[in-house]
Length: 378
Image (cartoon, rainbow, N blue to C red; front, side, top):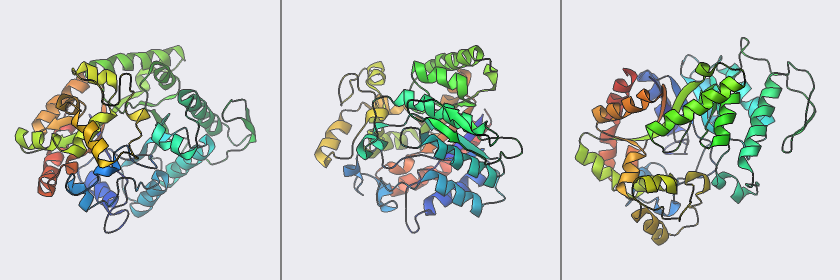
């Protein structure tokens, strides 16, 4: 099992990049395989709850919406750590609000500067990063498909003029002449969930990289769809890296973990799950039947009372089962089930610090490192 770390990429104290630099150092020391940043303009978390009485992290990070731009920050990390060996990825780039030519340029630039260590994670994005900024959200999957095809066309052009019809990104005598690094371009990892996205992953992806809650058995089914689509496209289906992004909560005991899961800020992560996932655990999504979860969540305008009302209706079982959570040994046992269903690369976001008590959050740090050591032995 290979392991990556997803940093929150949020401006912290005392310097904007202080938390990110500390996490990159920790990932390097722990012998992890990759370091990732998300691509957000704002958070999927209800900002009305970002207060010290609800989360210890508010003492370190002033705002949950102060996201740093990921490609800029990864270039900064690559420049500061020229001897590092961690692969660097964006998990995942929003294909809706970013022109694919700019994304192709950013990823190819990082690949050159990092000596071939860049990974382009990409997906169709979320409503929160598009609609509030005037980006059309009516056909996100179709836009995503055209974005990935455009990136591949530019990378494969060898500096020749590119002409390509597209309802979203038509190319007319377009030039892309950034050279590959030793004949390679960044790997493309696709955050695919629905049927059409899974087929696109089979056609274009070097890595299958779903990001939101589902069961291990459902992961295995989706991986089969991706590999089938790859085979249909004349690609080697086994060359696609079966990866997954997942949040973790780690504690010294089950009681510590249960206390963390009861905190409003960690419980709010359950709102990222779909109504279908709620139903699987005997509940109904607070935002209504058929709600898709993270992709359509817009929590920024909620006041404190509204946010607490929604969070209070999230069953603990939904939260518990959408995370890897427990003692280090329990997390390894949970990850082994995902491994048996096909996962070979886990990218982890440790949200233990989101609980109410700062000391309990810090106590989870060595437990997280212990869990990582166990995961790498799977």
